[in-house]
Every structure is written in C-alpha cells, then in structure tokens.
Length: 88
Image (tube, rainbow, N blue to C red; front, side):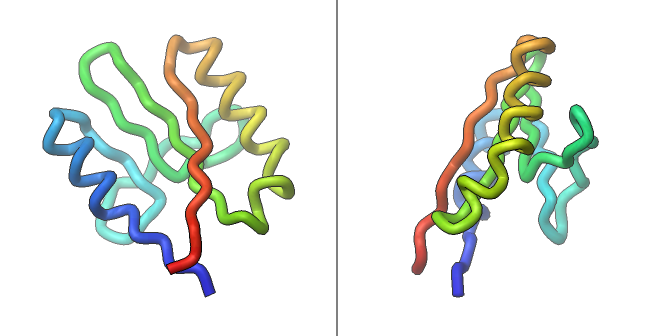
C-alpha cells in the first residue's frame, strides 16, 4: 500500500506563514475548484498554491482533474503542481 505523509510538507508551509487547507483529517478542507477538490491549497497574502498529490498508479488516471485544477490556477494567478508520492 501507499502511505502519504504530507505532514512535513504541510508543516513547512505553515511555518512559512501559509494558511493550509488540506483534504486530510485535522485540516480545514480546500474548496472545490473547477469541479474538483484539490489535496492542498495554501494561501499567504495574495499568493495561492494548489497541490494535487498522486501515486504512480493514479497520476495518469487523474489527468482530467489535474488539468481542471491547473486551468483554475492559471485563471486565478495561483501556482499549481502535481506531486507524485512514492511508496514507503
């Protein structure tokens, strides 16, 4: 199975002053953007980061979702990135 440990990355963003919304227990959920809920939205002032975390097996299958989130980011001056998690 794949274990995603987003804690360190989220904590790093929070320490840098970002307000982090994450589709994870213990975090406020990100909003739905272009019909999809991203895994992470981080906001600091006018800067918005949108992150989608995929596994090697889902990265191709979720291409439509990634494209919709990328399009939203481009339209709203945000930065989008897909992060491919590895097995631990």
